[in-house]
Image 1 (tube, rainbow, N blue to C red):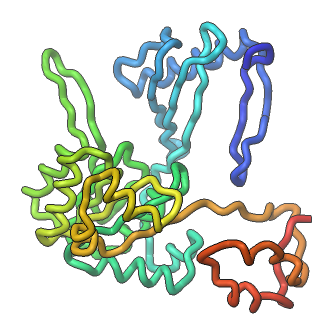
Image 2: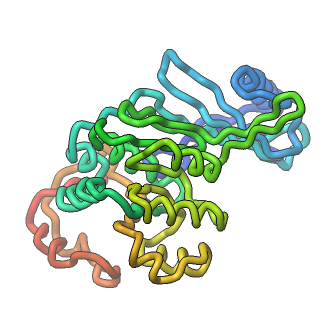
Length: 308
């Protein structure tokens, strides 16, 4: 920050917290060291550039982590803003719907999700805001599918390793005088010649050919899963019609299930207290639509966990 220095922040239980502040000189050295390390894993990364957006990665195999780095220009000359995402590289091996329940789904909803994977065609759409855990949920769901079915996936990047699927990553590279561009559409075209039972496209982008390909896959005997950015599940059909060019018949004939999820802050486990739930705790909840208010009232008088 101008006049401050390099500010290190962590996101903890949903909130961004300042951890430490470094001087500009030390901050530049830290960023330089990070970019030099990232250049080992990211071809053509210019370690001297600070005026452009840059994406990079660092592998930490001893910790089974993959760091995704996103650089953007800073207001301070010679520095960049950096956001780091930590992705687990451990193989995801779900054992049953308990893995979905552990993510926060009610048992009846987890059963609906699991049952949807038994379909032989159609679309399953996972929607939610950026960073809401869509990839974790949909990969957990894919991991529950029997290995007797041929699963093909493409993501940008591959965030979780599945033991029962053939996974691919979007690839853009230059080789001599040739440009290699394997995007979602190219992989989808390739999958159609590889006899898949299930196809997972990491993100449904507003590309007419990709939309046409997803519908074709869903109509021709392939269960097709994908993700969309949407804050509410009821917005998804409008989004598909107004932004993606579908007609209502496309949605009615091909979409099996639309899911929407968001991250909900939890009570800090270190400072929580247990007490009986009162009616006062639910004050204001009456104004929230699509909420099971009777279920909430049934909790009054029981014990709950609250901030201290």
